[in-house]
Length: 156
Image (cartoon, rainbow, N blue to C red; front, side):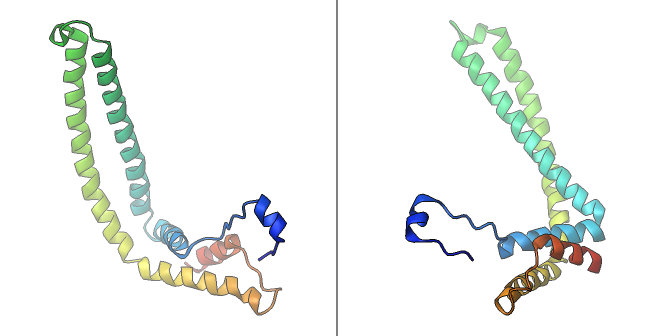
């Protein structure tokens, strides 16, 4: 690690971009599951995307309703556009809720499958940090995360 004078430290912010054990563990788990059970990893990634899309749709519906309510003049029960928007939003939100329930079931199956590979990911993460600390023994032993991931993928 570089050492800087106090004058420099006051003027700059030092960032440590080193991977954390938990983050590396999750990354190793993702790589392992993608190699061993690609369908499971694909499902997990699709769930993440679908979940984000569902949240965006709900937010869009809420914003539209709030906009119509704030712009409503007179009796809001006479505003046909608002009533139609509320009706369609109710149907859309029910569909989204059904998808969320289905996503939760699939997520449970995916997590159960991923849990079987967690011990391998924990050991791989620990192994990387052991290899990374070899530079304290001899400065020549400096290895990158990219190198370690390639070795990890070859070993799978």
